[in-house]
Amino acid sequence: MEKRAPAEAMSRSRFPDGFRILKGSQEYVTYIEHSSLRVWYSETPYHYESHFHSAVEIILPVKGEVIYTVDDSTYRVQSNEVLIIPQNCVHSLIMHEGSSRYLLLFEPDHIFGMRDMQLIEGLLKTPIYLTGQSESQDSIRSLLMQVVNCYERREFLWNSLCYAYLLQMYARLGQFNNMTLEMNRYDDKGQRIDPEIVDSARLYIDQNYMRDITLTDVSNFTGFSKCYFSRVFKQQLGLSFSEYLRGKRIAMAEELLIHSRQPIQEIAMSAGFGSVATFNRVFRDAKNCTPSRFREIYGDIVK
Image 1 (cartoon, helix red, strand yellow):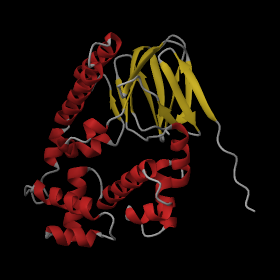
Image 2 (cartoon, rainbow, N blue to C red):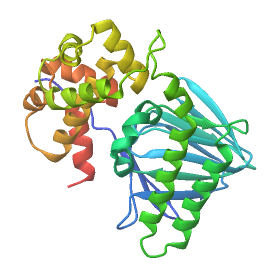
Image 3 (cartoon, helix red, strand yellow):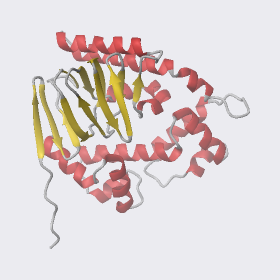
Image 4 (cartoon, rainbow, N blue to C red):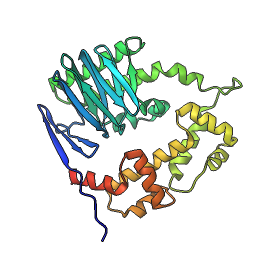
């Protein structure tokens, strides 16, 4: 009989404002009742090992610096700066004596689900580091301190008020990024790209991701060559066709793993993967664990 590897230990760290639960490298952020946002303030020297979670994480140093490692990049975030880490991104942090910070964690689905957020989808999937030289740094930090203030005051519907400021933050970031986006809406001949080309392609992918669709299928649907369509798609979204399709399939598989009891093989087929082996490999690359392990870990926390 094949021996099973021992289960990873689950640790619960107590903070003045609640628990942080870590199992393996995956963290499950706990929230106050009727909320999906937490704010932690600390001036205690601290080291948190590499981990990932479904929440977006934002660091606001108040004094000194906080050192973050995100994938292969290191950020030494200073007292007047902001670092925004996207969900499911592996990261660690160190704060030495003499420093202090606010750390914000929130579930982004309500914000990222807004239709016009698709216009800055690439921006939402990469770390955003706002230094003292960033044009948007002051206004973004001001909005985030409003989130901190709402959280600390806990007035009626405070969670919604916090999200209102977070939505403003992403809207501002998108506006500051808009000049680059506008430049990307022209092809290499200076002709303006019709955004409906990419919008229609996204709709086609969203409705057919469970099938064995290819770049040729989608480019034919839009009426453009593969090379031209591929370039335009990447220019507007910041993601290649294959990256977008893979992300769509992984997101659907994650939902089925959490909210259904379908066998893994059925989930692989429902999400558009050609085989369980491919599903396991792609899911592991995206989530740092197998689909079975993801379901097992999540099921241990949420019943």
